[in-house]
Amino acid sequence: MKASVLAATAAVLTTGVFVMLPTHAGASAPVRGDFDGDGTSDLIYRNVAGQLYLDTGSAEVMVLDSDVAKVKDVLTPGDLDSDGVQDVLTLSASGVLYFHSGLYARSPGGLGSYSTVASGWQIYNKVAAPGDLNGDGKADLLARTPAGSLYFYPGKGTGAFGSRVLVGTGWQQYDELIGAGDLTGDGVGDLLARTPAGVLYRYPGKKGGTFGTRVQDPKTDWASYNQIIGGGDWDGDGKTDLLARDFSGALWCYPGDGKGTFGTRSARSKGWGKVTQFAGAGNNPHFGKFGTMARTTAGSLYSYEVTGTGSLTGKLLVGDAWPSATTRLAYASSLRQNGLADLVVQSVSSGRLTNPAFYALSDPQLATGSTSYNRVLGPGDVTGDGKGDLLALSTSGTLYLYAGDNSGTNVGSRVTISTGWQRYNSVVGAGDFTGDGRPDLMARDTSGVLWRYAGTGVASAPFSARVKVGTGWQQYKKVFSPGDANGDGKADLMATNSSGALYFYAGTGTGGFKARVAKATSGWSTWADLL
Image 1 (cartoon, rainbow, N blue to C red):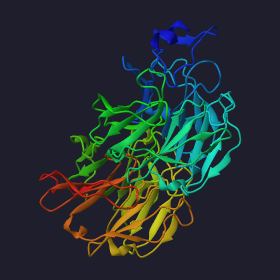
Image 2 (image 1 turned 60 degrees about the horizontal axis):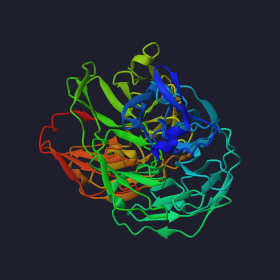
Image 3 (image 1 turned 120 degrees about the vertical axis):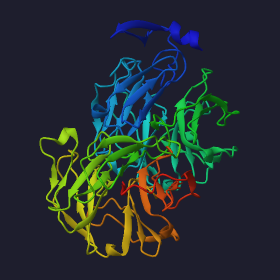
Image 4 (image 1 turned 60 degrees about the vertical axis):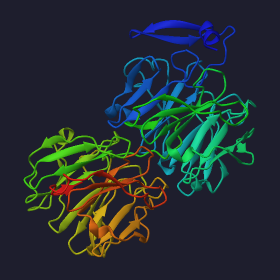
């Protein structure tokens, strides 16, 4: 397989890197996602810092830096513009779909040149690249709404896509939609879908962009993975395989048999926990916050990153300028498109909300705020426009919205959302707890009951009526969300008690949490705030 691919290529030198280009005479069909011409698919992924990397197995290179990337999700759909080169699609949080030619993908910053394919795609919580669904030889796309409607976008072979066609409804039942490629050798792409309980189904593609009756995969271990990656030939045998990352950060390969099922898994490599999103993975992508900040009463602020395995890294000093007597802090899901969380500072004396980040130094004020606020938080995009927003709670229990504009230096005028929030002594939010891709809130009342407010994506009423999650949460001194701490795209919770123990609650994606896991037995009781 490898020899046949390389025999039909020509090499050109660009920026010190050899790029393999297919010739037109007797060229074998290229392997999807193979950027170095070795006959096997490569990995593209986003890390905790918001950067995009290409790993060919023999080399690793950063192809997009965080301030350029704007990457919420990433796909390797194949050759989209019919030039014989594998291409990349990225989707921003604000819903812009970008096309990146893969010609220079092996060079540093090699995906930095891009063009806009479409906008308004923030209405979808998952986009998948199943391959060619309508039999015209061009790569197509599928996109799912939070309500579960699945749409087919036919590829044009120019890097663009035709008008969408509704495929079906009810697809919200799955927590992973995996564009698998052609699993059966019939020339039509297939789709894999996993339930939150871990049952994997294959939907065989039918020419015309539809699917046949689903078939349950016989394997029973699919719930043990936080991201399942499809569409590639990872062992070079010409058949489409799967990669799957487990919750310890290890990658496994399931070889395709060319008949729609998979052989015995084999271990590939370890240490992939810090990858927040693999290209072609089926999970809803988490965006905007991957860690927490901890403050002492005196004002020293430390940051902790998630490990991607349900834990936090060691602390890193951020600064000493924010004593709790004069400031309130929020660690908000990204107020810009780079996916990095932002620190928001409220002055106790004036109520003013500011962003102390270096990029905002020339104009740090976000809003005039109010001295009546006792809590500010940034759970993500609650209005459905793809831009990170801020919420503020007053001592009288009024919840206000400040709509973001993606600049990180300004928010809209405040809008009243609802009242009655004075009943809660903790309100947190940093992503999606319910599996629909929208950010939600968790609120603990004074009796220790935890309540969920599911996001609606509607600016005028961004949260639905509360639903009881559980009791007994009064045992915790602090409850906070680091975002997605275990790499499955679902928001999680952490909690500390008066003894300083730290516990992790993995989100299920259905609005609840798995059994708690102890992460530390002491050392966490001294923090004035955990953000």
